[in-house]
Length: 421
Image (cartoon, rainbow, N blue to C red; front, side, top):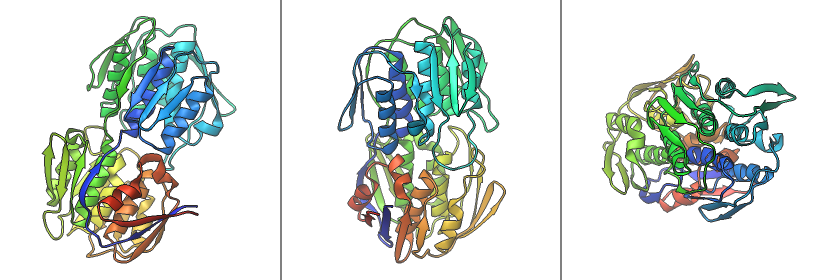
């Protein structure tokens, strides 16, 4: 099993280019199933999750070609409506093929999805949206079986226990664009990744209004056409490099970033004493003081503070001055990284869904184990700050969400290398 070995104590300095957004790219790739025409998607990151989605498209019968950051899905129809367990079980976002298959072909058989172990992530809102549109759905032997003659538009409220759901919004939206009549989705997710999907669907000929708001109105059409589209930059990767620069005391310019997608993070970094400068071509982040201020954070749905940056900010606050409080409102069990940070010398106490972090002067390198994608990034940041050497195992999680992470960090001056297991 591969490991990352990090020699801490280096300030990150220089320029780094952020890749295309994983969480935007995956639903967009699923959306190509809505048309028989060719689609060309660019700014596609080289990630394990993207490779899995391309394999799923291939298994469904679409011919997929990839050259660098460009994916071409050739014209043709699906020959198989089953998304098998072997692929779907490794990635939660693979459930995004459910809506397009039901809408375009009237039936689908999709395995229950897998992904990071960060607490319960039910798919009830996905099924609620499709059932509201008229699909008959049953669960059998670990598969979701859906069937309908043609979906029909309806008013749907997609409220969940922890707020709106990005993937459930995407699935319901993609199904609704080919439904008969008008669909209104209330409490829709407002994340930039949903806006990106909407822009792609409109380019394909979908009729959607309300982009960027919690109320989406969709007039169903009979068919969609092929399109060429470029995926937005990854705001979580952007945020991770912003936090890493601040934590190490360096100064990093992040190219191809959209600061407006990280407003909540920037607000907290400024509160901590970090210098953040927005530019048309990206964002510059520099350490503003010797020790940063403690900050309190509550994760919320967009435009609130993103749960996908919670672990990384915990690494930063671990070495800040004072006591920080981080409350997780999206995935209350997403705190497995705490024990590993404490192994490195952090002082973090967990009370329910709230972590209390008493900042320490320094962390020390230690053998640690990654539990999920974003926890992996948090351990990398902690390792960059720590004194001595840190070995991070189970880094296959990183390959799911960060394109060429060690190369990009090395380009900023980090001493990091991958050891093949």
